[in-house]
Image 1 (spheres, protein in one colour):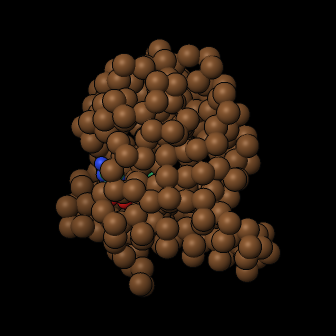
Image 2 (tube, helix red, strand yellow):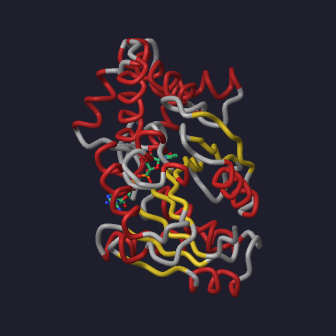
Image 3 (cartoon, protein in one colour):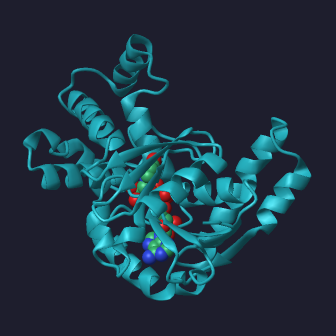
Length: 285
Ligand code: NAD
């Protein structure tokens, strides 16, 4: 299957990163968000991130302009879907939003189109059940920041077929990434392991075991992690971390995944990490 046009639904930090690497690899990209302002903000972020690549001489100014010219913007997923061979969803980590969107995409996309989700934890099998093409629904879980990180976790739902899996693995390689195939369980591999660690770091902070900087420094210098867990949570987004933990807790039914009350309190206060300017750390504009 030849993929030359990709629709990306959601132009936030993951969606604009996915659109960025697809456009940079020569694909035509249709990026969708809920409003003109949101989708234009996504394009502005891509432009700014490409400027950094130009300064580091990893891209020429001409390549940047050509890549940006391959990105079209939309505010209606149903309008962006026809003609795309692959659609990658990157909207917030809320099951009901994703279920509704996949039903819409199923009705609007060409019959052969693959519908992929960048979800961090939600069941691909359940998302697929909202469509009439479960064999063509798959998880394509990019890491943050997408242009920098090597891994794509490829998640097969119960009904996902071989051709869909192979097409997505091949596309990930064409984007310069390393795909790893995993099965559909809550949190897959990455967040099944990462989020309990982040949650434990928040419990350590709440219980006064140490200050945020001290917790992060122990994990950086002691365990050789490039970032401490609290700084990483701020990068992911505390709302996204909480949503993933809620999925793990509910779907695995084990209290070891219960979200730390301090994490809930930060999200309730709108302290979402870097994207809101404040999380476990404060960020300047
Ligand atoms: P984000 O909040 O930065 O962006 C979400 C975007 O989706 C926003 O721009 C919002 O306006 C838009 N949106 C909401 N509803 C929409 C709809 N119906 N149609 C089109 N656009 C819509 O969130 P994010 O961090 O980019 O996360 C997106 C997805 O990627 C989530 O499922 C998340 O779990 C997953 N993910 C996040 C990370 C991370 O580190 N943040 C890493 C891997 C995967």
